[in-house]
Length: 100
Image (tube, rainbow, N blue to C red; front, side, top):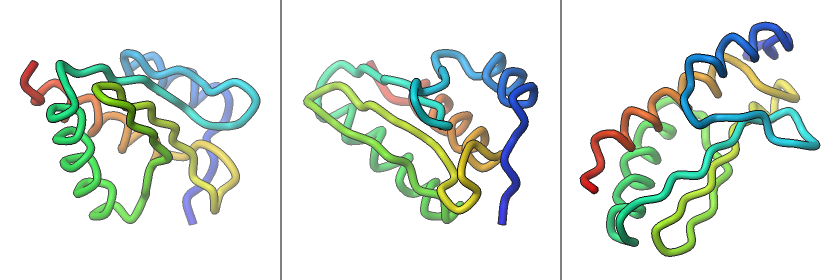
């Protein structure tokens, strides 16, 4: 099982993750991605889902038209772990590759 990151480690990791912030009221990180249209948002989600499945680490997310809201937390560990940081980095990279 992955180990929870300390508050200091979370802060350092978030410093290198543009757009990601701590979710208020719980130990999770979150980001809202906005794309040109639904097709691009869905494409992002599809690519991110393949990465998440390979990692066996799945996001909490919600999609409305061109907006994808993501929250990451490692439920088994009760908070944020290196897996969440790795998936957040991957999602940022995928978003950069999404046309728009």
